Structures are given as structure tokens and as C-alpha cells.
Image (tube, rainbow, N blue to C red; front, side, top):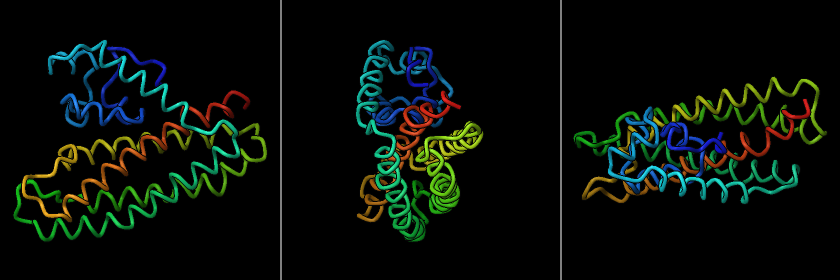
Length: 221
């Protein structure tokens, strides 16, 4: 959970659960795909950073993330559907063919993101199933005030989020942290910019569900 932030926190877990953490780690040169099993203290020491200073910045991000979500449950669910569900579907529909184009045109480039289109397609398939379960089952239960057995579907959604987090780590690795090679064409630049935004949005989406919405109903179940 985000409230457990400390120098001993796992870099990969924080990057996949705290909005803005991935960008911070990229800024300070901490890898959370290949080095994601390190603690903040270990990763900071390798890069010559003060772990406590990194944690303080992460805690500020956590405070800001919690403020960003609507407090009313009905409004929060509507926000999740319009800001995240609809956005993911729209953006992935554009990113997948763009990734196939870049992979084909730059097939001989050593940094070409081969396999990115397939990864994004797999993510879309899994997220479509996940979002449909929320939209058709979980959210209607929540809008009616909950259900005594709601803890089970919530646990299933949390497990799906864990899978999404693993895919985000693969996405970060495949794109080398969304670092566009020198001289990359505009399509490649657009692909990485769009993929980075999608990744950041997905982390924010999972945070607002895991840490804001779900606990409201788990406590009452």
C-alpha cells in the first residue's frame, strides 16, 4: 500500500502503484523494470541518491494522488469510467497499429520495439475483460450501496491489477523507459509519448481503485 512508503519499499511495486513514481524514477535514473526487485534504499545507493529524499518526493506524490479523486462514490465511479476506461480503449486502439507500423518500418534498427504491438494488444484484451466486469457487475453493486459478498469480486479486480502491473514492467523494459533513439521518426516519437501516457494513466487508474474506491466497500463487507 502507498501509505507504507519507506526506504525499504520495493521500487517495482511503487512504480506500478503510485501515480508519478515512474516518471520520478526515470528522472533520477532508477530502473524499475530490470531493477524493480530492489528497495528504494538499494536503488538510490546505486545511483548515488539520498533514499530519504526520494521517499519524501514519493510521499508528496501520494498526497497529491489522493487529493485528485472525487470524494463522492458515484462521482468517483463516473470519473473512473470516463477518465480511464474510455481513455484506455481509445488510446490503445491508436497505439497498437502505430506500434505495428514502427516495428515494420524500423525492423532493422537495434532499438526497434519488436513485440510492442503484441504486448499492447494483450494488455487491451485483458483490460477489456477487466473493465467489462467492473462496468457490468462491480460498479452497479457499488452504486447500489455494496453487497455482503462484494469482497470476492474486489479481490479479483486487485489480482487483475497485479497482472497489469507486470505488463507495465514489460512495457517499460521493451521501450527502454520510453527513451526514443536519436533520429527516430515522428511516428516512433508519437508511439513512445502515447505509450508513456497510457502507462502513467493505468497506474493512476489502479491507484484510485485500489487505494480509494475499493477500501470503501471492503471495510463494510
